[in-house]
Length: 158
Image (cartoon, rainbow, N blue to C red; front, side, top):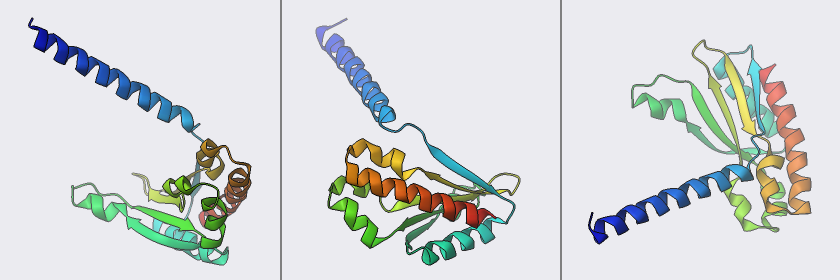
């Protein structure tokens, strides 16, 4: 084996090791507090209910991504909508603390139907996602958002 080949192999091993360490570190920052709320309603009813409840709770749908429609281009049939939900007033409180919260705010609320047609509302707890900033003001707002999303998801699913 030539020196050049050996150096290239060592570099590849170092890159893989560094990538694995970075992925493990990223995994360690989120403790997996995902919330899933099942519904007896249809997928369409749940999407409509989430949108309506967001508006009634002083928030807004800032973006809607019809992931099912996009995935249909690949041949996958799926009912799935991602809603980016937030409030500029609430967002301001945490953006003033750390602009990097923009990676997670507005919040992501995912509505989908499984293979049997059962609808679900799913989201990551804002307090779990935003805890990485280690900021009391952000934590306080995140806990309030936990409660708001819990109520919203439960009501939308009923």
